[in-house]
Length: 198
Image (cartoon, rainbow, N blue to C red; front, top):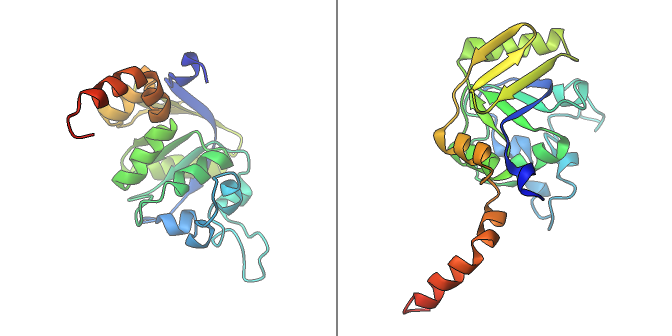
């Protein structure tokens, strides 16, 4: 991945509303799929149980209705529960490039940052208005501007909150911690060499 790819100043596309407060990581990515060694199939398992009826057929869950969407719009305390990175990984692999929500569990938000997925917040009214707009405009474009901390859709632009840490990491292109670590490897090795107890 080139340096240019890492600077995330805006993401956009169509939206998918995922309503409900306290949607935990076990709903997002059920524990039974955690044994997989890689994240390769995680997109298939995203909201696995919620997306199916008792017979295992797809139901009218938003992810079934808004396939191809890349901006998720969620409510309060999204991603709470256990700290599994699989949840945002599954969202990313399903195609989610950004999240607008009322609030997130801190670890979920940090995991999003590490994956280069902006997770911005807005108040309840702003979020529910956007969710309703998506229902009415499934093909409508939504843009998250990371630098300006705005979300634009239809003919509206709304201010959103983004943590300084996330904004800086995405805009500066320093969100990919592995790449960052590799790029600083010589510094890391020097530091290790200087440590008396290694």
